[in-house]
Length: 103
Image (cartoon, rainbow, N blue to C red; front, side, top):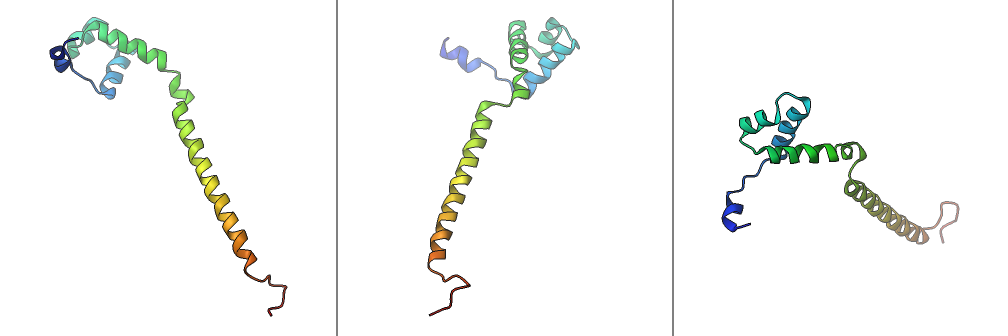
């Protein structure tokens, strides 16, 4: 594609795409009506609808990247707590226990 065509290419927000696609799925407007109303080619609207329907199940599955991030965060916290525990155990070695008499 030429640079001029790329410069003239419009971009649409995710919210706009979702709104238009949901109108198509609900049957509020036909593909040609939506195309005319929003000045977006029918082929583009069809692609949005197809992508939306293909990815709909992901909404309920949770994205793997979110799960991976959560696991990484929990592992980080666990390492911090293990380090804190090791430090406290070493510190206890330097203090007499309450049942031992001080010398």
